[in-house]
Image (cartoon, rainbow, N blue to C red; front, top):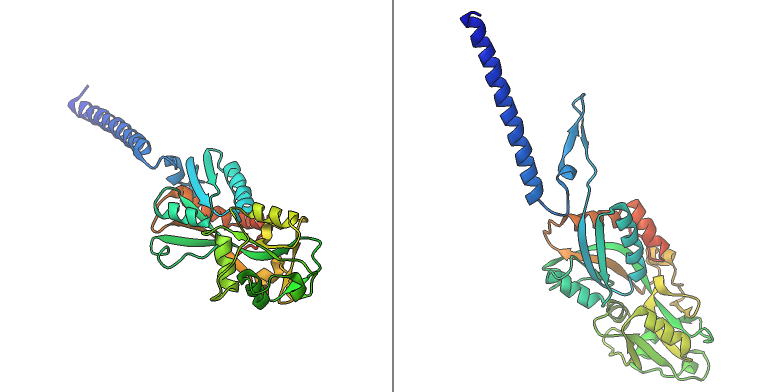
Length: 304
């Protein structure tokens, strides 16, 4: 074998060895990146595939991990429906939900104790310094009475008088001669905050009962003759009667058009500048066509 041929073969062998080392190093690096990357997203989900024509196709994200949320009881039906569908879509994701009221949800989200704080009221200025509010739906606050109550309509002005104790008998509003039992939510509730900010003005509410959940308010009104309460439109059922307010029914259409005055947003509050991929995927989902259909199916008004 001549020296020229030996030189060529030696060059090929060296090139092959270099290629093998290069491949091994690349594989090792990818493995190390995957093991030290964000645990909620696989490395594959970040990749893009390039076809033989040079066109790029993005690989669907494969999420995993746990997403924690806390907050509004008024949003319970909506959030539970969305959470179920989200976990069905991403089978390696678990969503843990607590229902301790809007105030607690916002506080825990701002302190990093939960990923999403669900609130049925707008963020206050000081809360908005740390949190970003994503409006995921709208909700009417229905004024509900016992089904035997003859009253069908009430003005916002008279509502303020009822809740401040200026009007104490239904006969003064055209109803039966019965004492009015004023029922509302506990301090810190998003529903209470929304109702009082819209209705009460500078009047101070005088509650006979302050209850800790939407369901408790509805149950109390349903079982108490002469009672009046406020509750999320999404949670109103046949056990109570919703009054018109200033002649306008509490319906999805009237909330969406703005004709029904007593309404508030459903929001998901998250830390500003968060890079949590589970949070982003969840917000994208609830605002998608599928997510908004679930919001509507639970009696709230979709925003998209």
